[in-house]
Amino acid sequence: SSASVAEPKTGMSFPSVLKDSQRLLGIGLRKKAVLGLKNIDVYAFGVYADDGDIKKVLTEKYGALSAAELKEKKELREDLMESDVSMTIRLQIVYGRLSIQSVRSAFQESVGNRLRKFGGPNNKELLERFTSQFKDEYKIPRGSIIDLSRDQGYVLRTTIDGQEVGSIQSKPLCRSIIDLYIGDEPFDQKAKEDVQKNLAHVLQK
Ligand code: DAO
Ligand code: DAO
Image (cartoon, rainbow, N blue to C red):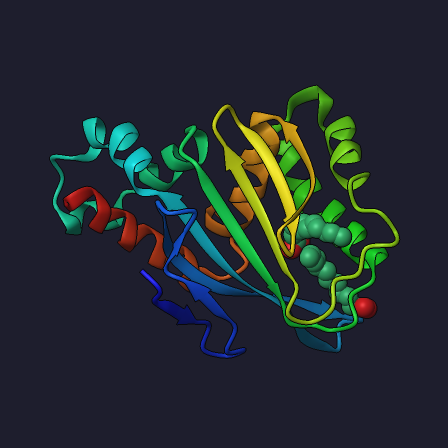
């Protein structure tokens, strides 16, 4: 399908299907307060998960529930985050003046927080390994597309405009990244709710 969906505030557009079988489940906006003064729109994001994997992994536990029941089940998102279902978080940069240094420090804060929760004793080393992928010479102007994908076997693969930057095998790192978007304190509440609703639809089919 060639259909796409636009994030309403920024107009950034996301294909409904990625990599043939990953379906768009929700879109949202990552904002950041700078100097406590104003919120800047940093990037729009789309959350994708593989249709077949969802059915294979989650039907047994959830297949018998109604759409209304599924919408209320927090465990459903938790099971998706913990599972080996193939997923992609696509980021489209909105703020045109991002430095790699500010990406690194934002990342250490947001992902670092989650890794302390999910990562166990190696969390510092994991964070180091991930951020060391971001070389100072990379440029991410407005419109750049960054895909963070969780491939089979809990491999987190990062690409910038289609070019692979690196991949790291780590279940807690995958969990921490996905948690930013559909966990307990997501960047965008609406996106998280849409993901839950659309997951329910997939399981009802
Ligand atoms: O330049 O002072 C500034 C504002 C920078 C905000 C940085 C937020 C970075 C968020 C991570 C972006 C990941 C692509
Ligand atoms: O928004 O706080 C956040 C975390 C976003 C994760 C971003 C990872 C992007 C890494 C690519 C940077 C390439 C220079």
